[in-house]
Structures are given as structure tokens and as C-alpha cells.
Amino acid sequence: MGSVFSKSMSENMKSQQEFMLMNARLQLERQLIMQNEMRERQMAMQIAWSREFLKYFGTFFGITAVSLTAGAIKRKKPAFILPIIPLSFIFTYQYDLGYGTLLQRMKGEAENILETENSKLQLPKGMITFESLEKARREQSKFFIDK
Image (cartoon, rainbow, N blue to C red; front, side, top):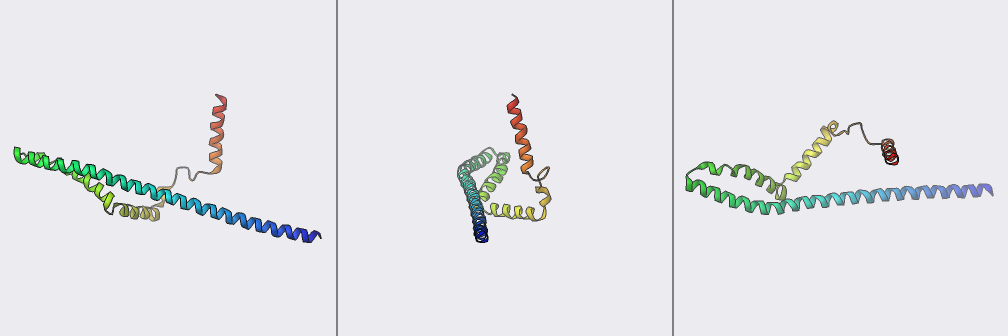
């Protein structure tokens, strides 16, 4: 009778462990999906911000370019056109970010860095560990208790 009971307990324990493993895996998958969803939303907001900024800056750039060109022609001073050059770089960058391929090029470069320059990505003093966090927490807790 004891062996039947221990066999049943063993099977129950094994099924409980499998359930816990499946549950942990499901929770991890949900966290990964949620993190990716948040990343995608942040990227969408960045692109939307860039497109909105481009509308206002494009208007400013257009008015400025026409005004400076008209001033250069009217006063016969080509130096009036010089501010258009740096403004055109800003305009081009914002256009490329909002509607061009800048994000794809940045992604490709980031992938290249991850593959070939991994040593540049290492944290000072290595990865954060549970022990280092606990040490910092205890020191901070001690600091607040003393004062």
C-alpha cells in the first residue's frame, strides 16, 4: 500500500513540475511578446514624431529658402543663400527618418555591431547579478535606516 501511495505521489509531483515548467514558459513567452509590442509602439511613435516634425520644419525650410533666395537676388549677395545648406541637411535627415530608409540602415548597422563588435557592448563590471543587486539594496536600506 505504501508503494502505491508513493507511486501516486511521484506521478503527481512529476505532473506538477511539468505544469510549472509549461506555466513558466508561457509567462516568458507573454513577457517577450509584450516587450516586443512595446518596442514596436515606441518605434511607431518615433516615426510619427519625425513625420510631424518634418511638416513644420519643411514649411519653415521652404519659406526660409524662398526668402533667402529672393534676398540674395534682390541685394545681389549670394552669401544670403549659405544658411540653406545646413538647413537642407536637417530637412534631408528628417525626411529620411520619416519616409526613407534610415531606420532600415540603422537596423542593419545595429545587427552588424551585435555580430562583429560584441565586445563594445559589454557592461562595466559585467552583467548585473542578483548578489550585486542585493548588496546595493542592503547598503541603501542601511543608509535609510541610519538616518
